[in-house]
Length: 250
Image (cartoon, rainbow, N blue to C red):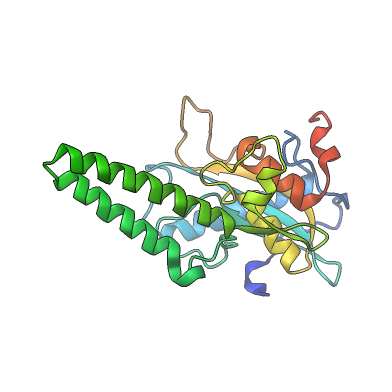
């Protein structure tokens, strides 16, 4: 385990009432301990972002998340990460990484994306309508195949230590198949890391950082519940607690 990814609290949390059961990721209420961790993590982002050649307040903002965990010695800390992918020029050494390892299958995802890009260039440079039609269909089929293989290699653990791919998780849900970018949200990343390293999940929160979008549907530093389309089947599986998500959000 990379202990450098665990943040230790700077704040005195001795007087905070800490529940032993994880809060509902889809509810609006946030435990006090998660608010404290989020405040500290936001301070970390504000400091680190000064080193980045990327300003989330000018360019599109991003969802981040924290997970308060209990360590083997029964002390508390927290993990932090972001949803989706970071711009390649940003080095986030303290962020929990993606569940998917892009080196799998001899970097099949990178090679596949390069191939799709090359087909796109061929389409752009072709003067033959029939060739363009054929290339578009080829690109479509290769894209579907690549997405399928990608989902087969996103593997999540539940609290019992059982592993399933995204395809298996969504197949047994009402969603049927995973949407694009499923598995890259902050909550599943954080929980996967915690379960892998025997860290007990205590409290979870997700928040928006940076430029607001869509008529302020996302505002800087504001908390937001986990997304239902991408995350609900994954989190239900990982936490083995469908009752948690079926209860009315308080």
